[in-house]
Length: 592
Picture 1 (cartoon, one colour):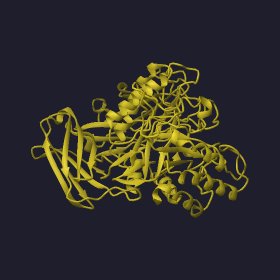
Picture 2 (cartoon, one colour):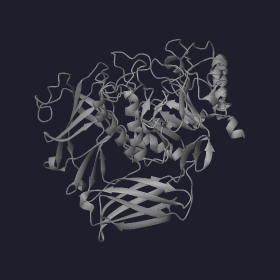
Picture 3 (cartoon, helix red, strand yellow):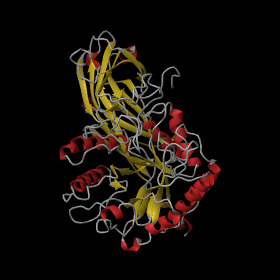
Picture 4 (cartoon, one colour):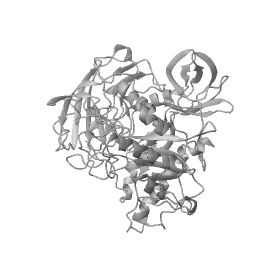
């Protein structure tokens, strides 16, 4: 149950729930440490920090109480936490769900964890640092979006926001919380489902102390038990195969979910119990396009960048997360590209419940691929993201890169080599979902000369519908005269005609009442012209038999980029009933 006096106090990890937990959001001591001398001044221990911050909001945001938008090389957080009596005698685990970028966690003045990556969870056991029922927690975050070493997404490398780059996020930007576990406990789990059997396989990771114990799983649907399994724990990763007596498919627009209870026991003694869920569905992609549960689905995606005017990277409330999905569905979309940012788990949870498809992307902009050593910062974070999100049925595809290509004068194709490596790792971790290796960029080829990736992924912001249609005239030859064709030439822009076409960015039509801000190409002069252009551009793709999915740019304005269907503060620019028919209308492939 959320606590109204604590910001973002809802349970932060909805697909793996424990009863013994404590939200640590709210007021913390805070310090900006641009000289990085905090450790030498003893910030991690007795030295007092000079200001206060409200977590989980980043210091650039209004909701944090700081609102400092200049560069911050290093920031510190500190708080003495009284550990609940029910936690004592157990292992106490600290969770920082996201902190940008290089994080060091101290408890009682001693380092307990170092983590690199601004988008993925930090988990550390702080039990040994608890004294007299209290823990002094200090968190140091180093962040430099200009370094080229880190995944930064759309964070501006200038003092100001500009173009399609926006206010930075430094340090903690997702929930901080504690949970109590037995030394023998369930670390996490993933699921693979089979809609034909039907069945689910739960792949469960456990702590070393769980060896020799017994693990059981019970699946229920709307309160009724529909399957169970149990086994002895003989390794740190256990698979339980559960036959399901009832078949309820997760579908687009109808997120039917099973509940899943996992229990770890030592004889009659319960060591750990977690509650989760799963969706029974399959996803494939071929020449025809996307298939969910074997049924063709025309992808009506919208670009969602996950920015908020008051919280920057962090939504003010759980309701605000869900609302963005509901806004999109009201406009005729059935999914989103989560663009250049790793969204928090509760957004994925709402998508799971609503039947809203997601392409999971990383914030790879800002990462300098020309230095091959940087793969050691990018790839582990991408793997952590996949491991965090694989159990969500709403995630129907992966996208590790966006508009990332070799310089046209660079003959080494080093970027292409790295992308093939990341693609192969992605497919080895999760062979069940399509992977767009590099959205809106050059075709990527492996060492055998085959084009990798699940489809031909195109970005084009041509604003005139007639000219837009001409971009796709020569599809049967593998030539699409999009924006990259004119930059790189037809020799590098030949697409694989055996694969479908996903136009994953188009539109971006600028419209703002006050005339400030920008969109792609020439802005429209009236709302009527906007709707006419939107229908014209969308109809080009909807009526193209080679196009299997679209993604309109974008759902809402972000700062100076004002080409959304909603304003930045989430007000509809146009009545939803005027937009909905444009995107919801059946495509030519659906009418066949």
